[in-house]
Length: 251
Image (cartoon, rainbow, N blue to C red):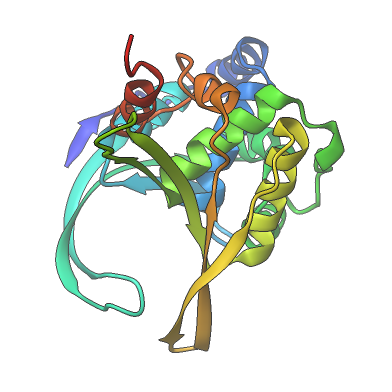
């Protein structure tokens, strides 16, 4: 079902749209979308179409508006990831960026992508390998912008109730890719003087063999929490509001 549709642009209009988009946006915008595509974004090996599909409407609609790409809603039967394999009806909001828009978008987010598998797919679409931003050159704001959407995609934000002290905030990012988590760990540790641990939480069986699941808890640092809660950094209110609740306790 189509929820929002945009008229097809002429070549001249499309050119002007991309030039204006480039002028209007900054590195923090591209960090944000790199975080989403490293986690939940779909980048095919060849086709110049990239997709963000989520059960949460908010970030998908934001990307649809951002790139003027159509917004869809669909339901289909699917199965939960290993090791559970439970069938259920998935309800998804979808936007697909195609053609020259997808090429432009990939070029802009590539310097901030950390997921090597997704980067390889992006290179196959582009036909070359763009330069990645060196980890030591990331700013604190860029790290937060990326981490915000990466945890929205593959993370959890949990408020743990306490009786005698203020409630505790627990934020983690899950992945079967330990190398990917290690890169995020490096960026956070460098900018917030922390020492994050990455733990192997379980082993599960797939058609390709055994795989491990890893969990990385973000440091409980007030500065990080406050930067995540700034307007327009996170794109999912249901997770952002938990961080705001934790920050505002007792006020």
